[in-house]
Amino acid sequence: MNIQSSHVNTAYISIGSNMGDKRENCQNALAALDRTETVQIESISRFYLTEPIEYSDQPWFVNAAAKIRTSLDPVDLLAVLKSSEVEYGRVDSGLRFGPRPLDLDIIFFNDSIIETAHLIVPHPRMHHREFVLRPISDLAPELIHPVFNKSIRDLLDELNTQNQQCILMNIIETV
Image 1 (cartoon, helix red, strand yellow):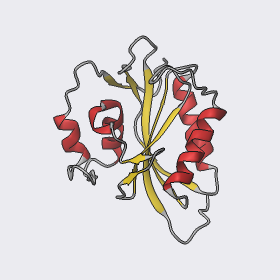
Image 2 (image 1 turned 120 degrees about the vertical axis):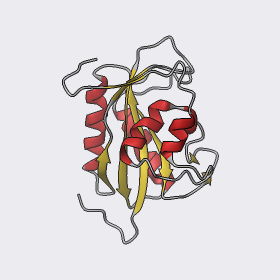
Image 3 (image 1 turned 90 degrees about the vertical axis):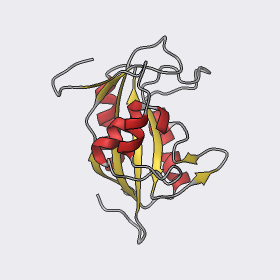
């Protein structure tokens, strides 16, 4: 993959699925993203089987995170991620935090702090979610949250993980 730009950004994205072949959905979406001209996957965390939060009456998720390099700005990257979700069958069910075949979120974009009507970076709930912090900690435990000025490791250590099971998946495990 060759990023077509003189300016390259670094972003961390969270990926999850709890419908269909969850792990395969995540892996295929990341592979498709890496095949684009504007995104290069640098590293992918381990995969985790995670308990749903906010809305618990649904299947458990498979979650991971990826560090990417991109020539896109944050708004254009969000558009690519949302388009990928639709491609994998995501529809607006009207149920916030409900089941979905694919969920992609920008967690960090460089060390930017962004607040628009459609995008907030760093992700506004990431520090409350083990399924986001643990995979990002696999990739960059010393990464500093630009709002809280704390490392991912510190945010994870401070997290109350009650009702947030996050189980490391073995490569041969099926869900």
